[in-house]
Image: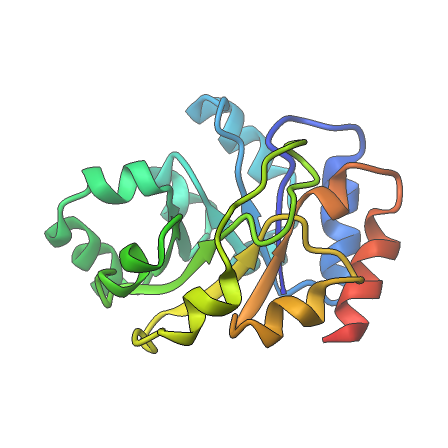
Length: 196
């Protein structure tokens, strides 16, 4: 199970990140789209060094080495803009690469350098109200041919529907709104974690 950070700063966020990892979170994606390089460096520097190998950077990839992070995420836009040679270079240097997709055809066409990809919103998004997909994910995933890259369900994932997402054929799930849009971050994480 993956957790994606809140896109903007929130109260006690670093404390919550530490608590999530201490309660079994294996992977946290740092997604702060409006952060400058300095803000990103400051933010990540507050996270315990021992936890850095469990982080993935969504932006300012050049900071990864300095911050001790070995996972890099490419948004759909940055993936399209990044030459294959550059992606291969990251991969050869030992980085774990991920990306986001919005169509199954894009997933099937993904370069094998990507270890996993987020696909959604599978259910109505919690963090972006009224953001819902008209795709039938069960049907979409029935035709899946790409087994090199893991497929991660994102969007509206809660303890009530986590198992449904997995029955569609997803390899894992990512949580965002369920963790950050209330004061029950750890409780909600544990509920989902226990189901897996």
